[in-house]
Image (cartoon, rainbow, N blue to C red; front, side):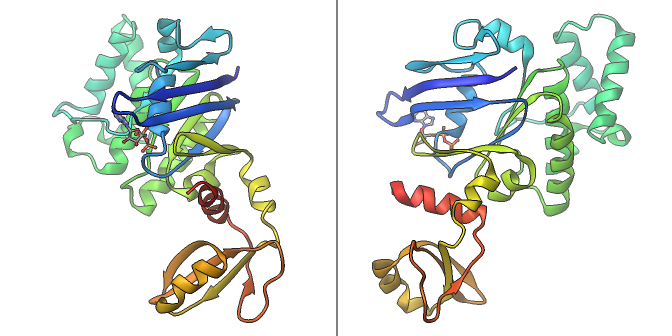
Length: 290
Ligand code: ADP
């Protein structure tokens, strides 16, 4: 099964064009949607999750028309929104039991088995009786995955799930998602380049509502081979370099800017040839549109 998005556009009432002719093909596995804040990722996620309408275009999940047959989509959908909202004082086990009941699992015995399997999967079994309001950020996100998986979805949408997680929690979350991604379509939206690099075999870069790249992360990185140069400069020189070179990023390293420059021809002098990264891909793509 594939998710196909074709020519999707959406302009909000305030005139912001959040999606501008977006077309993507999302196969089974982990798919990364990479873009800065405001790029249009959540608008796209909410549209696929049947929570809001587009102005034009189409979305299909297998042979289901996502924009029309919303109930059919919802039966197959798991969704972890960016802001999961209020965490109640009830326990993870009770909350999952309640959600399973809403999903139609009528037998208490079946629900218990399902809830325990989910809690084990996301590694929260030991803390299943603790109130959700007492969970750490990482535990909350893992609980978020458990609630999204309870209906056995074919399509799982996770919007900016790693924001605010510390490195250990992020790793645990990556491992969990990678496991889930083996059997369903997972769309992961993020502004964090490493999320995509570590998890996704296919990705898209979205900027100002437009798709600037779709393909494999490795192919994108390879396409920049031999075209990225780096140099440490003085802060005061940055403006000059930006005028004379195609500076795609600048990062402070030990208090001085380290610039990455895109160049089709070899740069000599004090520039060093740099091995391209996915971050270079991201910044060079979005730089073309800025
Ligand atoms: P992202 O998830 O990539 O941060 P969003 O889809 O949230 O991007 O937002 C895309 C653009 O649409 C932004 O400019 C944002 O301010 C605007 N936007 C999002 N939701 C609304 C809304 N309900 N009404 C008006 N503008 C919105």
